Length: 386
Image (cartoon, rainbow, N blue to C red; front, top):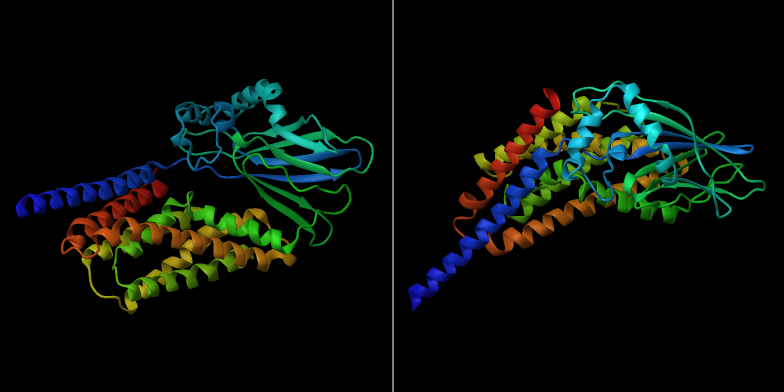
């Protein structure tokens, strides 16, 4: 009876072990395949006498392909991704022709409203860069115009949820600026015909906390894998806290500096280095050893890189000076909540059931770190050579 019980226990552990590694494998494979990340479009609104102009920096291909970008982190996750890649390869003139032909159906989803009335937009101009081999997105510039009805009713701007996230900005005189990150088909706050829309500090704080969380979970696969790399180094609390503290302090510094425009590093440099940081910490886990100044210094340096990656979102939003500190703090809090969520889930699914097993390191920590290292290495190659 004892042997049967012990055998059943071992079988149960084996199944759980296989499940955990399977989940990690799926996450790693999905991450390695992610080469078509969904980025928010950026729209600048100008409300003048009798009309509103909106200039979009937009990726047209997934819209023309009919991909529903609602909550989608990568266009490869759509069954229409092949059509999206074909459209990427088209010459600029042909893609423009296709968009203009589809405009009668698409125009209703580019929403401009005033006083409860929907204002039909018209294309003023469309500029499409030349395509490539289909591997990379291209940002087109689309300018729309809509006639305003008489009166002083404010304007609201948004678009269909299936088009994905939209960063909307309204410039005013001096430092006045309104910016919003719209998802799920949201409309902007009412934009006055004179001056710029205002937003309370509490509203800005809440919005940027959510934005920071989303930048980690579910959209930040590279940051998730880096945090898991820190987690698999050791299950003891002190090493984990030291690493997370160093990482947090570092990315807070560069997040602020990059968002202010004091430090600017091209994404072509930052993204491969972030991928390399994932590989490095994972390989260090396999090598083993105790926490020391070298590991903390390395994590701090890599945190500086990840902060530059985080800053891309705040840079697009161009927060006004009066809201910058509030937005920066809130975004950073959201990022920390996202990171703690990842660590909490890892602890609940992996550390709690398996952490005290004598084979935890050889069967879970090392193989998981090897998967993470492989994904990071693939990303380095993809982001530099492919």
